[in-house]
Image (cartoon, rainbow, N blue to C red; front, side):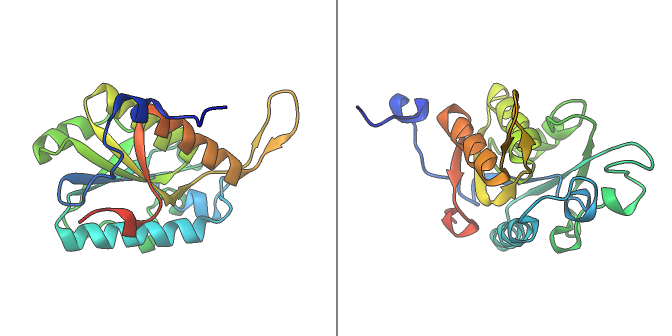
Length: 199
């Protein structure tokens, strides 16, 4: 049996992660909802720590950074006016880093993200944040349609357990790996950690 290859491999595309000097960093939904809200994720703290390392490396390299935050309903999940909707302190925006609020999983849908990236002028994106199977995935897939090349930092993202159709549960680590494998087929390069992003 032959070793499986991704479509990117078969096409001869470069599998090198985007460099900090060529990309913009998009931090997706790094909000308190995933820390202590109704959607608290397992192993969120290590993922946030790695996201903070990505942001620190980007700031040192002068990489443009855009923060995405999901806008929920008042009093509910991701309440923009309550603590659950706020970006976690350890990865909060630095001065001058914009925050774009989104109503849907795809960060490009009904937001000004595309316009912001056009002003930045970079066509490579480094994605970090939550959840791997949902907002990170939908944003990476939409980014390909818009002409961007994406890199996702594995350990700076994560997800939660989900029920399986027909019964059973797929555990968060398995869903995370499966989501990254699907994205790596065509939509994104996967960098294990911040240290794997070229300067």
